[in-house]
Length: 356
Image 1 (cartoon, rainbow, N blue to C red):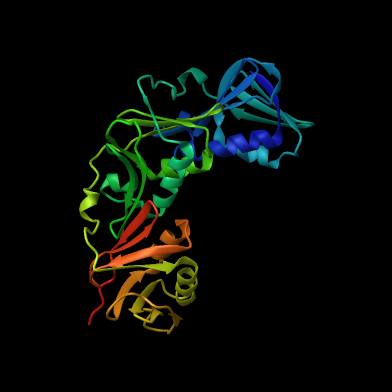
Image 2 (cartoon, rainbow, N blue to C red):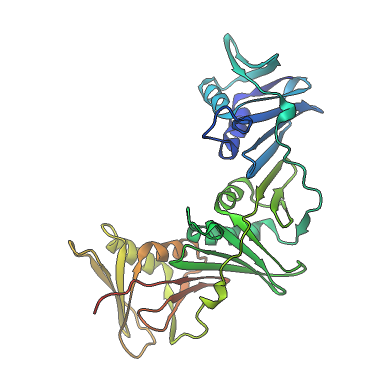
């Protein structure tokens, strides 16, 4: 195997592979990147068995067909130090030789035939969802996906395809986020997509991709890129029972003023108290050692004064992904979950219960 490629193209491709490599054991074949030249193209793959990526590169020259593997982290380290000029890569017995001008590097390789096959999915079904709508929906719920929860299902997002709607759901047990699309022709099913996969899909794809799945895998691909992830095997909690069926109070609020006021009082401490009065709203920090407060004058259609105590991060996460100038807030009691809504996206948040 041999090919010549510009530094920038190679560096971008190898850098995109890094999240898919085995990091703990550098001797594992999954710490390696798979390289193959055929039909005047370079095929690059990386996988840790749970998640994988394949990219096809056409901007190569001086090609000799073949295949090999090489440690992905070490290869990237070398490429970053080279000049922005052509680089020659050539597989030679048990090494990959990297050359540029008078600089030469050798890295050990493994037998490419032993590399895991990430293209073995034959009976997957294509989902009828536009890529841009899919990515916009998962972007909104990403902040609410939990990390390292012993209930593995919560370390992913639920794709709940119902007869008329497609719900994208996540929760970290303190809040629940839900974004939805209309379902045109997809069969009913539930898939739990790992958080790592959710994040990587947003980096890799913008639009013009196709989405496939079966009961254990999700694949997203376009002309030159194929991504796959194993799904989380488990039963997602009954999220619909968390959503308030009725709201005592509900009213719109200007997003920009909310963001400005919340950020103003959270410079030192993230927990805040928001007091809603028919004629104004007061934002104040719950930090016991300092004082931070601000007020906005605004008329609200509520009969009596009311307060909510909350981790401001949950509010800012919602506001940062909402699209409109105004969002809707709804609540029943200070110690019950409250509701934030923006078009087809809403979040239910558990408040902080204050001692009276």
